[in-house]
Length: 386
Ligand SMILES: *Cc1c(COP(=O)(O)O)cnc(C)c1O
Image 1 (cartoon, rainbow, N blue to C red):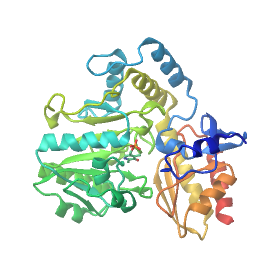
Image 2: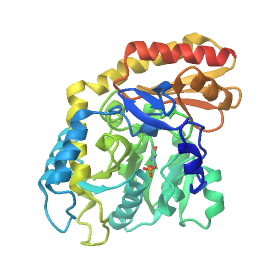
Image 3: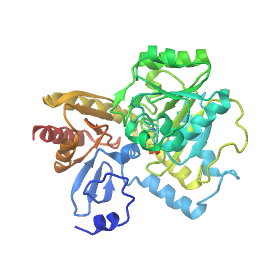
Image 4: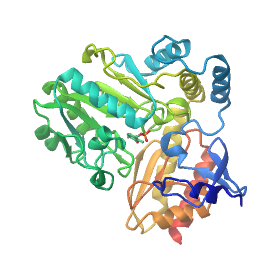
């Protein structure tokens, strides 16, 4: 055992709930701790690791860019940024052809909320119960979790939360003062809850009819996670604003807001961020998107996701209330606290994460193999049996 844990403990903010595990190396869907123990990584950087560990195309792109031009703010144009815009425009719906680059998911949401105020000249926002959109003050106002919000009030005015998948509640909540409705297509932190197609179709229709912008938060579901490059493809909608981050740059910190020209001109300098569109992150994102397409990761997510879902269902444990998800975001809702099962999984060589107190969530790298999925199912069976 190395001294990593005591050295971190001496200076950590204390804000994170940590496991007694120091990870020091990764390859594909596998990680190793400082004692040489191997795990299948179903935490997957909490959704930022769709490409897996140690992707050499991303590593090479980063190294090359670091030697060529490592910083260049948006005061200037840049070749890597232009290249990334091309890639994003290629994989996104044609209507979402304007892009603001930033550094994280919460920052993408912050920008989206500001853009909605600019575009609609309205201030209110409707979000969903159990929704998660980040923890900076604006995004936190859209996030539902009382455990995140209550310590920090007052938050932004004018935010309300409707029950997820309840069309009538949305119909009532959207008014002439509403700038935006923000929603995830699969609630991630809120317990791995897929939206219904009817709810999302109706949300798109209502927003259009009432001049409300539809902001879809695909920070967690984007880049192949649900079995298509973006989950909106499966729901058959194109939002006005799409928030992206997590896996956009192969594990390198980056966020993006893709939005429609229909939002109109945004006033110059009304929003910005120093590291937005920096060439290092852009180089990583270009390489990551190319690797996604080359490796067919969305299709693997769909196939392995079905395998994982069916395998988890087949365990048939009396502790399980429901297995749900889309592609390779899968969750098991238990009739008890998820802590012991997460611990059991770790003992059986699988790292998974929670999503609320009773849900075990799996977010493996999308290149995970069929044999590794079988091992995850087997470890889950054993963890649930003890
Ligand atoms: C993780 C997440 C965020 C926040 O992203 P950060 O990069 O942690 O700020 C926002 N929305 C969703 C849906 C997320 O899963």
